[in-house]
Amino acid sequence: MAKIHEHEQELKNGGALPHQLGAINIAGAGSVSIQVTGAVTNHVPTVTEVQLRFNSRGRASPVTIDLHDVYYAGGTFRIRNENVARVSTLTFHRQAGPAKMEITVTSVKRKDAGNNLWQNFKAGVKGATANLFIKPVAIDPAGNETMLNFGSALASATPEFTFPLAQNRQSGKLAYH
Image (cartoon, one colour):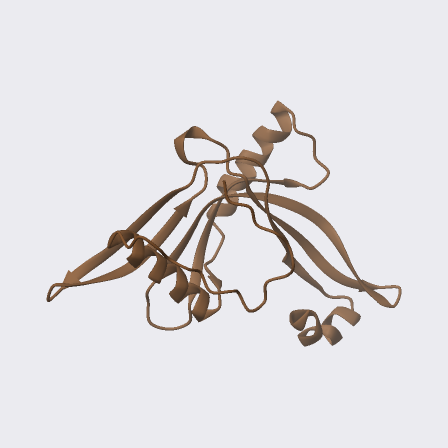
């Protein structure tokens, strides 16, 4: 909502905000692998990268993101060009400067597209092409640090790790099996 407010005049003048995140969804079973990369300096390990791969063991990723364009018409903000991208990996880095997350996708297709061989083939081609252009996205530094700390806990075989409650989390339930 802040981005819409920030660009309100531009939108009211006929502009649009392309590829805005509508939702992140997790539906169905999947197989996740986590790769932790780092270095040991003076006997002190430091995690520099954590990669979550959601399509491990040949299974389709259950993680999708809804994307759409935002524009202004008829006195209100509206959305168009609704797409769904199936996320294959999220990568978090320890780096100088703003915290960013890399995203790769398996497929991108219109939200109303069918689930047949042809639509899925086109979605895969779009996904491969999209990965050439997806830039790392800015994320909350606390979230990035949490993921790196999670990687440290995994690497050091810590028996327990508690994720802090996200500040901008919307209500909903997560189930772990």
